[in-house]
Length: 387
Ligand code: AOS
Ligand code: ZN
Ligand code: ZN
Image 1: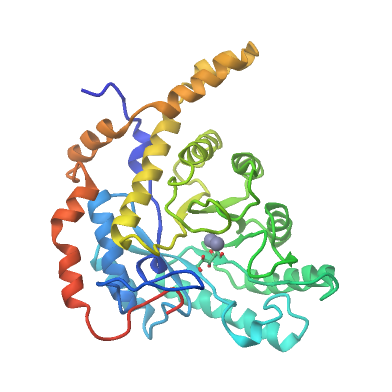
Image 2: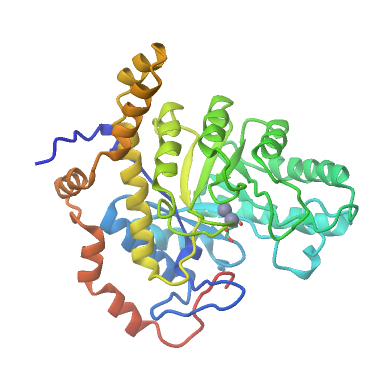
C-alpha cells in the first residue's frame, strides 16, 4: 500500500496536446512514416481523444493553421466535442511560405507584414468558431549575419504588427508570444528570450502573455527561475513542454531531465499556476520521430502528472523552516525527498478510483486501437509535420 496522499489539486491537471504530434515528423535527414498515421485533422482528433480517454489528462487539442485547415471550424468543434475533447490553442504559421524568407511580422516590406498580419486575423476568426481562448505566435523571424538587417527597426515593426493583431482579440481571448533563442535564424532571432517576449506583451496589454517552450533556451539556462519570474510578473501564459538534449529536440517531456521538469513544476505550484483560473496553460509541443505517436503522447502527459504530483508533495512548511534557518543541506534534503518520492503506485490507485486504467500505457497496448487505425488508415496522404 502506498502512503502517498494525493492532493485535490491534481484532479484539475489538464495538458493540451498538439495536433502535429500525431503526424509523421523527422529531421532534415529523413521522415520515417508510421502505419496508422492520421490523414486528416479529424483523425488527429481521434488519436488525441484516445490519449484523453486513457489518461483523463488531455482534454484539449492545439491546432496549427494552415496544417489543420478545414472549411467549417464550427463543425470541427462539434466533431471534437463528440469525441470528448475541445479545440484548444490556435498556432499561427508564418514560417513555411517563400514570401517569409526575410521575416513575417518584422519584415521591412509593408506588403509582407500585411500578409502575415492578415494570417493572424484569420487565426482569430478561426478561434471565434472553435471557441479557442489562445492565439499562439511563434515566429521564425531573424537574420543569419550581423548587419543583414536593422535589428532595432525589426523590433519596432514587430510591436506595430502585434498591436494590430492584439486589437482584434475578443474579451475572452489571449495572445501568447513564444520565444526561441535560435533556429531557423542563426545570428539573431526577433523574439529570442523571455525578456523580449515580456517587453512586447507588456506593451500590448493584459490579454498578452509569454509562452515558454522548455526546449528554447541555451544549455544550462535555469528555466525554473524564468518560470518564477514570469509568474511573479503575471505574464506566464503557457508552456510548450518537451525535452531536449541539444537544441530544440522536441522529445518526450521529462525524458531527458525529469529533475528539471520537477523543478519547473515546483515553481508553477509555488506561483499559483495550478490554481483554478490561473493564467497558465500547460501544453505539449513535441514530435515523435521514432516512437509510436499515441503511446508517446500518453507517456508525455503521465510524465507531467508524475512530476506535478511530486511538486505538490513538497513539504513547504519544512522547506520554509530550513530556509529560515539557512540550513542549506536540510532545505535541499526536503526538496530532494519530494523529487525521489515514487508516486506511481498511488497514481495507479487514483486512476482506478476514477474509472481510468491503472496503467494507461498497458491499456493502450491491449486496446487494439493501433491495429484498428493501421488497418483503416490506408490510402490518402498521411499527415506529417507541416501537412
Ligand atoms: C518552434 O520551434 C516552436 O516550438 C513552435 O511552437 C512551433 O509552432 C511548433 O513547434 C510546431 O511546429
Ligand atoms: Zn513551441
Ligand atoms: Zn520549438
